[in-house]
Amino acid sequence: MGFLKKDSDFSSGEHFSVVSAECYFQGTLSVQGSLRVDGTLEGSVDNARHVIVGTDGKIVGDVTAQIVVCGGVIEGNVCADMLEVLAAASIKGDIRAKKMIVEEGGRIDGQCLIGGGEESAPSEKEDKTEKDN
Image 1: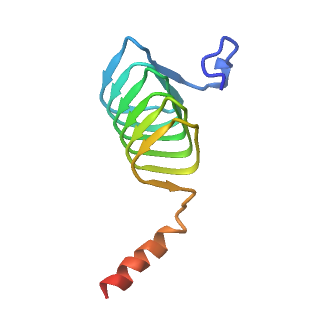
Image 2 (image 1 turned 120 degrees about the vertical axis):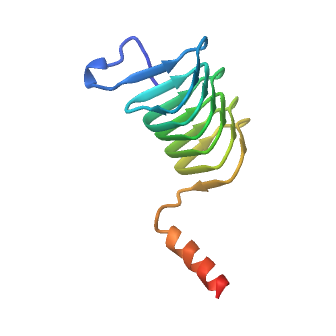
């Protein structure tokens, strides 16, 4: 993916945040750019562009980002335009994504809504209303 490569273009204004393997962070992160988690983060991640969870990384909380690549553990709900679950990854929580790739061995424990947009929400509300009447 090229995240944190030596030749990354930092002049583009992209902001990179890292929770390294030795780090433990507790609280909500509102990230405008990209976040890589190789340590433990207990709390939610909001508004990120990219969230990458390394193989030893763990997030205990909800994740909202444009692109999420999980190679470690996420214990919380994930909302993303694109979600990639790598072979060693585990997600315990509900997923809402426009697109999702799951490698063989990747584990998900929760409900998934993939590709569903706002156009499907009114029909769900209509179904509930019809059942109630």
